[in-house]
Length: 63
Image (tube, rainbow, N blue to C red):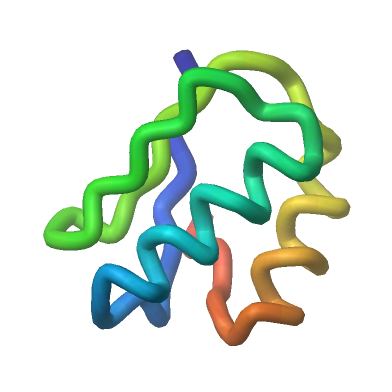
């Protein structure tokens, strides 16, 4: 399982938006922890595509 650190998530709407974005890019078994600012997932979506898609939603990968 891979983990991303995501900055900018502040509410459950943000949490669901991040989850949906990851799933749309092919990630499976996505779990987004709002308090930790992390998303865990299975699969191997392209990291740059993830970065761009999350940025479009107002989030930033912290890596």
